[in-house]
Length: 263
Image (tube, helix red, strand yellow):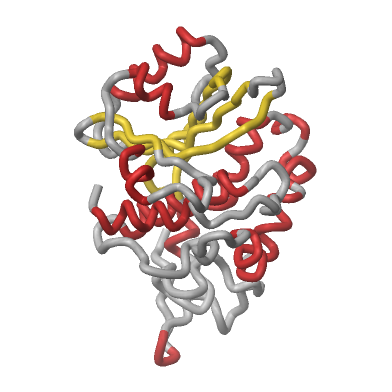
């Protein structure tokens, strides 16, 4: 991982405050995870952003939900109301997170793993991740047990690179140094070392689930029909907020129109 990417991920991970808001079950760690995954996928070949962000503007000691809600109010509302939108069958942390992934990054295929609840199961599953092809990437869903016996959830991106697995920290303190963050990104092929990276001091990992980010989702209408743009790219690629009309569908620059292919 290049120094530029390490600094970019560090900036994203520090974009939080002690009073950071949330949307549904999506807190700072999950929102940061989505931003890291999106930017790694979108900009891996051209280098990371230096400012702004895919979903929110990165800034230390700043609530990321402020800029996220300003940019994508309808997306934020969907996250808030996901249980009602997707139905009671999604009323678990891992299924809701899958619903969030499909909502936040619908252009990709997502594959939910089983849920692993014992130390031996978690170690065995981590071994299978280590044996996955380089380039694989997952959204990790963690349940931690605190010293007082209560449980909290957490989310992190997990990458398989040529040297092993990398767990990218999220929702880190503003006092955490870049050098300390850099050390956390050293890849490992040791399951016990990986499980340590999935924990924090005084917390224990008791449940582990992943959602693998796969290839692009091939929806026929995504590349046959577009509003105000015949490439499916550009500023309106997440939607224009308007219904398609006869004057906007497949409309290109210069008042030209891209014809639909024959079926």
